[in-house]
Length: 114
Image (cartoon, rainbow, N blue to C red):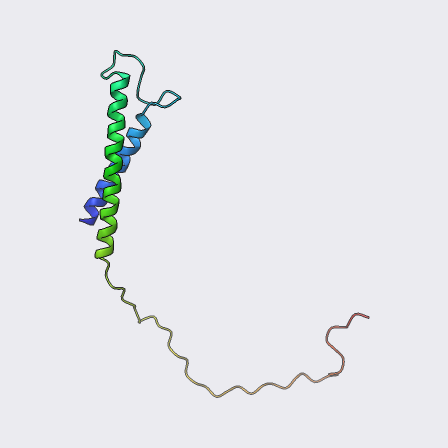
């Protein structure tokens, strides 16, 4: 069901983009010509495209809400895979600190600024 609605959502989104791009804008639009010899007049096309935009927009929002509801209800509990848990290291005897290197221990390794 979720996959079907997701495909329908994609088709509605593509149709919504196409209808919006066909609408007449200040620049002239992509698909509407100003001649009255066409299939629809400019006013009839504008009414149709406006109505189609409203219907497709409402359908897009409705399907989005339904998809969110289905995803929330059908959410499965998360199972944690414990097969990759880091094993505790084997306890070993503590390592004794090593003695400092022999030499003049009063002179610092880096000379101090005077």
